[in-house]
Picture 1 (cartoon, rainbow, N blue to C red):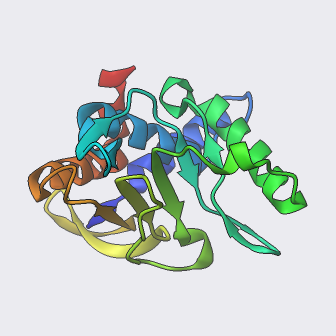
Picture 2 (tube, rainbow, N blue to C red):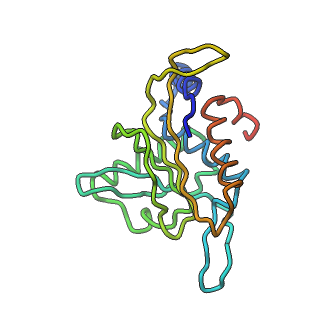
Length: 198
């Protein structure tokens, strides 16, 4: 779905103008994901095929795509649900640097429970993300670009992003997945929605 990210971009600019460490867009999107997973924990699950059951996971270990000279890797931010935007920004930077220098350990590349794929950095609007086994879902985020948008009943140029969710139907139905995606879009469009979960 498309979402108006104008207010999210304004909120990030305001945070970064206030001083202190700069907050990355990826960190804000991660914080939105962890809040959405708290509401829709079915998507932070795995399917145990031997036991023939769905296992909901308590912690969110968030994978994210990082491009390197040797190809794409997916480092994992442990306990992303317990981190604030500053901590997430620092951890994304640390793991991205380790990915680029080839020093990631196997432990830093495994154990993810949900993946956030920001392919917008490659100039791509939309995609169909492929779930990283044994995870049950992945959120894809396209580039944020100025587009015509109806805002408060008037046509305006707004910063618009395309969000894509791929999920395993064994863990939930479309209603749950749609609720997750709608909540993510609501937080992108109105970042104050996140204040309810802080």
